[in-house]
Amino acid sequence: MDRSQKADAVAELNRTFNEVGVVVVTRNLGMTVKQSTDLRNKMRAAGASYKVSKNKLAKIAAEGTDYAVLADLLTGPTALATSADPVAAAKIAVEFSKTNDKLEIVGGAMGAQLLDAEGVKALATLPSLDELRGKIVGLIVAPATKLAILTQAPAAQIARVLSAYAEKEAA
Image (tube, rainbow, N blue to C red; front, side, top):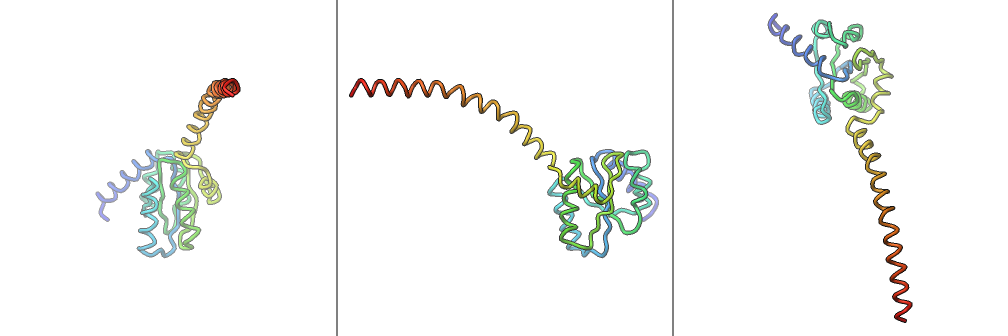
């Protein structure tokens, strides 16, 4: 990697650090190409990315961002999982590490908040941003639905009573 390629890599990582909501640091301990590709595909499907980066370049790129706290975690064969959704990257990385012992969760950060491996696992158990939005919409719509049912119920009851009287008089 020559000097200009390193500068480009640092600029790209810096841009990524400024745009994402979470960074998960993982350690690769001999993953095969197929396993790595599978992990990248799962990340991409969830709106996250997974990138192997040189630790020194990642440390330089993190300087001046909220993710500068990651510097101590960047030792050994590491990779960075990132996503704008604060849960997506953590969820996929933790799920993949459960089925593959060659991927280890080292830690991560959510903005300037440093997370250890247990913190990342706890973050992975939270619902995603889309799931939370769905729950909020459901909570907002539920009272309106109940109100519509309640306003229709008296009219239906009156109609049944009038129908019963009409049947009684007809008989």
